[in-house]
Length: 408
Ligand SMILES: [Zn+2]
Image 1 (cartoon, rainbow, N blue to C red):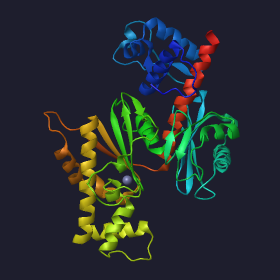
Image 2 (cartoon, rainbow, N blue to C red; image 1 turned 90 degrees about the horizontal axis):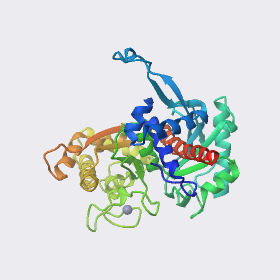
Image 3 (cartoon, rainbow, N blue to C red; image 1 turned 180 degrees about the horizontal axis):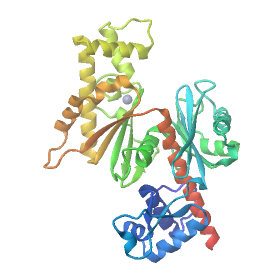
């Protein structure tokens, strides 16, 4: 279940409420008896918890479609589902140059999307708070809503984020270091805000809306400028102790190897990152100097595909290093599923069958199949949906805590 975000002492009943709500959410529609069986909470407690949630408007009853003759055995079964209009959530991904917003209802249905450029590449804490306020206001208005309709805001950004504390140690989009960004946002916007590292939010997006639904243990590897990783263990995002998340890109694949942007040598990213590929290409003098790095990479990949052996060797080496890194993940976590997630089509060479085959050869061999590997190309709006999922989890906790104070 979710980590505590508000810092108050947990009411023992609260854990049961959160489990019931997340179980209904994961299964979309579920009868009380099945919730009791699934959660190991007594049927009587499930009945009283769900009655509270219905009266608070968080969930609602729906008649189950008659199937398999169930109607014949007495009264029709009733399922419970999340009430979509109970809360609206805005999820934001802050990228290098722009921000994407997804507005979702409480069931996760999309109500609208919006994009806006960042005023500059690095903002101070106050500038970021003002930008997010303006962004959410514009996103709601452009979708026929108002800021007041929103119950919570989730924000994903690159960097090192201590999500439970809402604290940003460092982000490439912020000129200030070590800031309590969540508090600054809440003070400015006057809505509950939740922030996290973007790789963790991709893991949440996969868990709530993507290939990770109903998978207890899975790993998401994100490939953008760097290589990121989100870990879901036993149904929860694993965020580490220092909030640094999993720095898959800086795991070492070569002793005294290539120099990485982080200053160390032999990191996986020093072989896979776009700068790493171009560094090799520049030695081979393949692309022209006046092209942007993205165009250079596209040109390099085209050369490899058309049979240029030097260009091919650059991608082959990157693929081998990636296979080694993936095999290390499998050997440490033994996940059911690995999702390779990214929007950069030029990184397709990393998803090639022979890369996955190389990974399979490097994992511990047992008489059961290695984990499934799935490829998910998606854009910034899916990351924004992950941010919305995180805010939905937080808003659920606040709503359920409010139920707790009502009883006592
Ligand atoms: Zn590194």
